[in-house]
Image 1 (cartoon, rainbow, N blue to C red):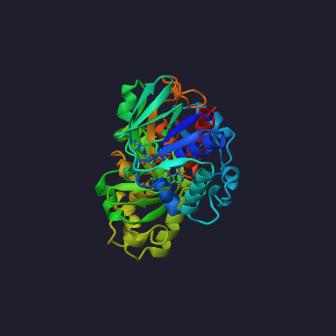
Image 2 (cartoon, helix red, strand yellow; image 1 turned 90 degrees about the horizontal axis):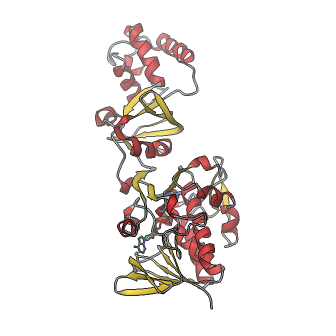
Length: 399
Ligand SMILES: Cc1cc2nc3c(=O)[nH]c(=O)nc-3n(C[C@H](O)[C@H](O)[C@H](O)COP(=O)(O)OP(=O)(O)OC[C@H]3O[C@@H](n4cnc5c(N)ncnc54)[C@H](O)[C@@H]3O)c2cc1C
């Protein structure tokens, strides 16, 4: 008789786990609390689903799960999806998307694969408990009970709670004895002093963003930074946000607005602009180099007057301006909430699971996806982990 497996959660990792367990001969039932599976998959990559990345370096992943390195090393998302008829294309930065350019086809490919392999999908079933029954497991969803040889928990993290993911299983898992690394929002805007960014709301600049603790550089990322009325946003800021969640107000974000220029080149550039624009208001000195409101803010912060002629800018102000252009500092006031986060940093600690992601506390229960304490950088790394961990747990649970 084939082994029975219950998959809890019909997101990215749950669908990967269900398809793989069924492929390996298991009789699989998937329980999803929402009316449909894969709601979050449809939102990924702005509806285009950045399903993986050509760069598989483990430095893109963070958390307490060293086992993940081995699990990720053998996984190729292009080949895995190809077997379900989903073709992909890779952009210049190495990000992998479905050829169709729409996330719906990723979900469709997984749904078709699950149906073809006989996975039974039951929606509007919110799991609230798990208990042993003989040498099997009983899963409780409302007033219904489901019994199986193995259970794979794929209920996600706490990010984007409108997708059914609000950490609802964590209290139960803590009671069962699991160590949970405190879940925090990641891949999200970083909050700062509103007075510093309000005037810049809506602007975007290319910059190198650096997370500093005191004068210690923790991490730098380059890309487009966006300003909102109380936060810094954009992919490079997202990639620093887990540090903001961990270190809070002891962190500072520094922007280098001309990362390709050395300090003496910036000085020469400012001298040239002064020669060309000396008769214009100071607020126009940097126009063209940066959006006008940023140029004005930089001059004001350097002690200059935006309305007086640029030729009146003092040597001291010019010196401060040169420094600010390469090191514009924003105090960190935390991160945006889970509702604005793409992923959760934290979750079930790696010490609780084996190399195959089976529970060390309760053999017969597996974990995968964002429920575990592993999160990736922006760029397809989180879905890569969801697919790879789902496959690993599905294969192992079916044995
Ligand atoms: C807006 C947005 C954009 C993103 N874009 C990308 C991207 O382009 N590339 C990338 O790599 N990553 C992206 N991510 C992150 C990625 O989507 C997640 O890391 C990934 O979906 C996690 O997969 P998962 O299976 O662990 O959880 P999820 O996909 O979140 O699925 C968990 C499922 O479990 C269900 N569930 C929860 N509790 C229960 C319960 N008690 N009983 C039954 N069911 C339950 C939920 O309803 C949900 O369907 C994005 C995230 C967001 C929010």
